[in-house]
Image (cartoon, rainbow, N blue to C red):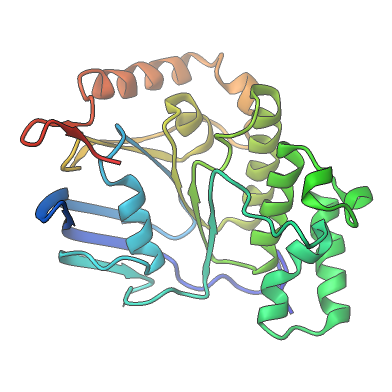
Length: 274
């Protein structure tokens, strides 16, 4: 049975060492990453930002076990990441809910695949839907829910698997501004109660600073670590009000300065990486 605070978190420190990566496009090799090294201790919330095509999502997929680097190593908890781990909760910009399943059934999907008993699944989905404020919408289908509500269901579905490691690829990007702030605060509140490791990819620099313990800025392709800066802002945080903190403004200027002249254009090919 899964529980958002029931079991002791497994070791989920992330070590990325000397990672370089190429992919083939139009019959030629294109380099996306160049000698990237990042160390993320267990329980830290790290945001990764950079221009489009700089390899942010590629690195995240390596941590998930979905992509093998061309060279270098990726370990989680001291173990090489050679396949998809059951310790990972992966969220995307789009909710990916199955339209023929209700909110409750979507939350319970991963538990079904793990052969968790129906009664336990029901208890877990009820608790998690309540946590994201959707208890009264448990039997609604995705088409009956707003985009923000669907993304809340996706958060609950991710939490249902009790992941030790959250990998979040622009999970709030498709939301309107007000809903986005609300869901950011809800996720922060949940995470602060769990203390699990988070790797968060975003194009929104202010979002990166408002949420994280640390922000890593990638250069344009091939991606390299251009800036690695701690975010010394108090927790618990309110995403809406923390932006008025003078330290937030100072950090924002540092990150914007690092990003200012990076377009994501690979001058050797005159293409923008996807």
